[in-house]
Image 1 (cartoon, rainbow, N blue to C red):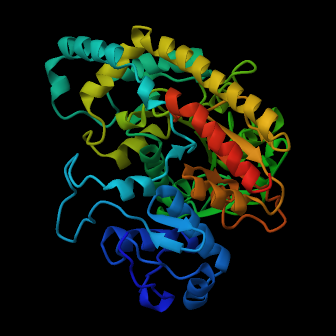
Image 2 (cartoon, rainbow, N blue to C red):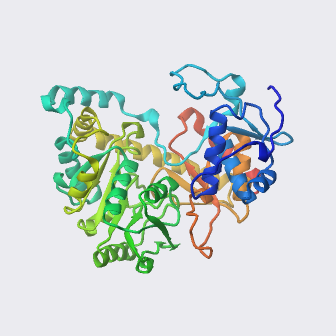
Image 3 (cartoon, rainbow, N blue to C red):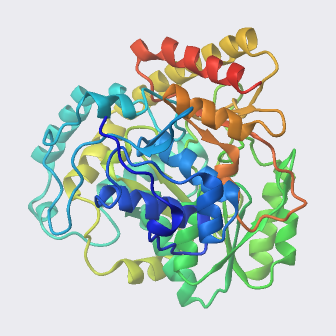
Length: 480
């Protein structure tokens, strides 16, 4: 590796943007590496030095470094400090992205990238049903009317909306007519549309869960809304606290399987959320991101079934099939449909008609149900193996949130989460800590559990045993 001079915090010229310092620092460092200002091999200042130069907390810098190490942008080695990883040549300003296969990283760069991944929220892409999808695509193209090849309307193809209405009623207890469904390009697209609707309604706030995804909070903030985190306890989000919000026009929730903590919202809390929406005229935005994958008891039905007039149900094919399809759907209260269509525009620019027709055939033919059943068994076996290995090799670690979904939470002793993340980065294991998902405005007296959020859908069968071995080594090295 070519030795580079160490940098100092004052030399980095980092511009931190946005209200969240850690996210701003991570983005700024990533852009400096991507743009070539920080060359491969460059040694970065210590977290203490950079924090002092930027006037921010040392933990903020340490967390940003740990995230970039996990992503492969940086490396961290004892005695060598934190350095920019050896990677393929950076994209210079004014040049387009390198074509696929171009600029392959050298051997040092390959070693710099994480060797193992337990990132949450990612399905097993190797199990995508290619042959069945191709068969549905052929049938869909042959049966498509001529107008399907033109500019579509913002509602989405009626063929898909019709089969979705039947499927969601059967599988998730959702009450909807096809005209209440709007097709979108995944959950983020749907949430962006709802943010625009809430802005038009002059809402000032949106309540959210205290643990979730910052990209979702940022979307709502970008729509001009203040996100207000709700407290939680062992029964889930305390939705009775909605009564204390001043101008909330909506609450965003994952009631069937809270992300990332993993529990299902208690029935009393579900009722309280709907009662608040009825009383105030607000909306419940239900993110049903992995509702099909429940293992140990009967599925928890969608919250939307309690009041279809006050709940906006958002679902996608991202976890059940693949996020690359960019197919999602919104089941809207009848009076919200015109508002969403007005925001979406008069033509469909986001979702291809052929993909919609293919998914419609895939569901109608029964292939979707068969695929979900097969993946449910596969993910359950993975989860059982994870729990069994940890019970044997790391018995002090409690595993929670395992009744459903594609991830589990490994609860760690207080003060050990950052040690575990550093050990994971050292071992080349991609994994995320619970602190990564905590809302920055969560009340100081709210419990702050420490743990790792472990996704078990991604590793290939050949890498699965080795990944579990590395995970156990990480837990041992961090004192867990």
